Length: 244
Image 1 (spheres, one colour):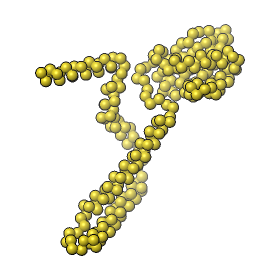
Image 2 (cartoon, rainbow, N blue to C red):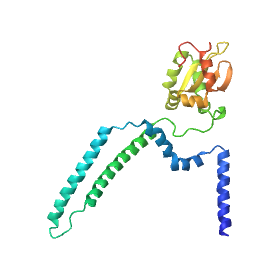
Image 3 (cartoon, rainbow, N blue to C red):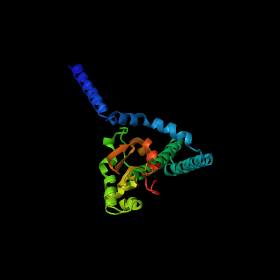
Image 4 (cartoon, helix red, strand yellow):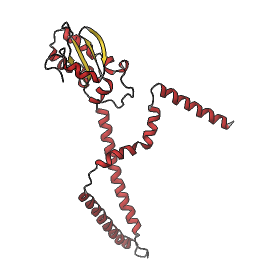
């Protein structure tokens, strides 16, 4: 009975893992794997780039040694004064333990400050904490939902010059400004001179993964991949002095 129950749980977990993986939720397996062995890749990437300051290391060792010896001599003398009838001397291992405790507390303090700094940086930053594992998919592109391209079209139709569209978006409300800070908005005229725009991420990695969209210019809003962007920007439809 117990073996059957365990088998049922195992099969259920495997089924859920397969289901989530097929739906693109691979993070369920990535999170425990990263927590378990993710630090190995970090060390492989960072350790070769570390510059060892041997002078500072020697200075630290010397300070710890002086602190340890001085603490031991002081505590041994204090021990004799407080316990004159005790024949035992102050053990060396007690001094070593105290110095090790001080070093541990110092390291823990630095780690706590570092954690607080990074948490504050992550909380105040505008960059997303996670990145989708889906490759190029027009239906899942963030700016397709944001409608920044349509906002640029509305500004153009209201009489704002092409060269000032990006600045106008940056001076918009908080939501529009946040989008405009993450996305390039480049005027892109249609064959008949109709107003249109190219919208794509400023970040090269996001741009490579997601591509961009264009709207107006005689066409409906369409998506394009990053490889097409240089050709679009070099074409005659882009307004002069507006390409990034």
